[in-house]
Length: 231
Image (cartoon, rainbow, N blue to C red):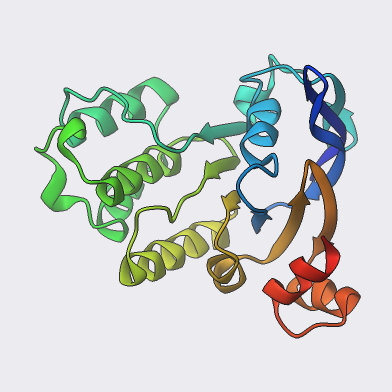
C-alpha cells in the first residue's frame, strides 16, 4: 500500500497543497475529486516527481519512496499533451511499449480492442480529436509496467458512450491488480467507476473513503451532495 503523508506545496505565498495525507490501496480505482484549481494536477506532479514538494513524503508499505525511485512505482499520464505529434498512433504505442518495458504478453491487443484504437493505428497523433487523443494517452499508460497509474482527467473529451466503455475497461485492468488513481472533475463519472475517493478542495483533503463512508459522514445520499457538504 502507498501512503501520501503531509504533502505540501506552495507557489510563492499561495498554498497549492496543504498537509495532504491519504492512502492508495493495491488493485483499486481511486478517484481524486475536486473542482478546477483545487490542486489535483499539482498533487499528481508532486507525487510523480515532476515538480518538488515543499514537505511531505510518499511511503510504500511504511518505507519512504525517494523521488528517484518513484518512476518504478508510479506512471503519470498528464492531461492535454500530444506526444510525438507527427508520428502515427501505432508508432507511438510501439515506441512507448519498448521504452517503458512493455505489458505482459497479449495485453497489447487487449488494450487496442478495449480502447477502440484499431482504426487509428495509421493516423498521426497531431491529427486526432481530443477524445481520440485521450484514448491513446490512456493506452500508453495501460501499456506501462508500473503498478500504479496516475491519469489526469481520463474522461475529458469523451462522449457518454466512450466514457462508459473506457471506464469499464479501466475497472477490468484494476481487477487484474493494477492500481488506477484518476483525477476527475465530473463527480458523476467518479461515482460510477471508482472504488474509493479522495476529496480535494483548495489544496486540502476534506474526505477519503468509499461512497458509503463519505455520504455517511456527510449525511447525504450522493457523492455530489457529500462533496458540497464537506467542502
